[in-house]
Image (tube, rainbow, N blue to C red; front, side, top):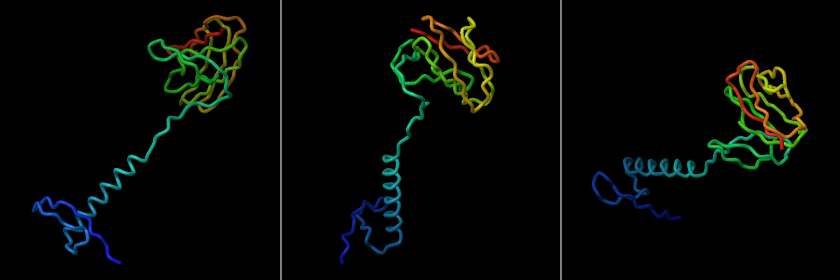
Length: 155
């Protein structure tokens, strides 16, 4: 079986070299090209999927930075890095909302009007609460870290 050599430019001499030649420096150049090509192909083939919270699906509207809204399928509030995500969650009256604490500290989800309160949620655990039956906007905070705030919208 005859192998067809691959032509490569020789940067030192400007001549064309072949990978099939038995010169050690020429093989080094061919191996370098092989590693660069393999690295490029592996980079092109990799993908990074964003992780998203999972919960039972239900149509709702969440706010995005800048005040924009979008429709999503989650009735979950995630606590991470001393912040609530999403910062505004729209649910139906009486809906069950799950709060998942992905942080390293204990937190609460407590309505400033007293409409709901999860109590302490330890790191790595979840609790649920029932949204108010009366439509309206319900700001809430973490009682432990009161700089944390968000809004539950019932409509």
